Image (cartoon, rainbow, N blue to C red; front, side, top):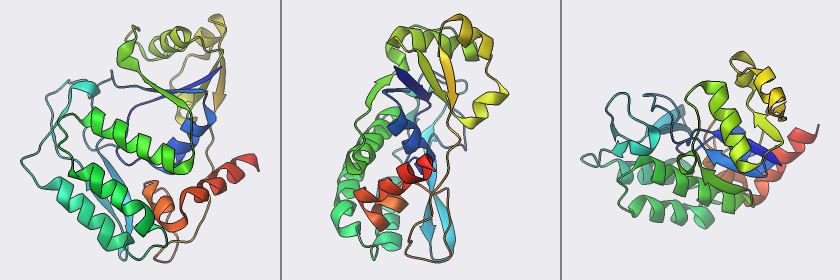
Length: 228
């Protein structure tokens, strides 16, 4: 069984969805420390000027775990995010089909960042036809050390293969995985190019960019790029 483990992200990019799609079980690593100004509470969307961040404001107390981080609802971030999606994707071919889903999601009262990110991921997975089982690391016991944590979580799920991001080569102790009988594969994601509302093409954006421009079937381009 192939397992992938990744920190929850807000409006994650296509590389994140690719990893989810390739795994048999995908674990949301919600037990690690929250890192400000990374992808856990923000992502990028396409605009006529290039791109912009959509950031969820948080009430963060160092060194808080991801599953403990609360959203700062004293700001009108939900309306601003919904408005930004409509402004920049309102003319995209599939906005009418999927825009209401995100407006409904953003109309809810969210207190915890991890729960918001879970819901966003579920919406994207369903839209793209990704059926991978998703679990949370907070449901399991594991060591704190980086490689040890990953090995323990893989063993808890009965994994014989761990799908790691390309950056894992720089910090993972592969011998520890080998000793546990777990094979390690690296993702090496290749981003496809597709039609966007604005030109020229900009990659590395939130997955909503592909969804609004190409629909759920657009994820086929991700799978085809992987097979080359």
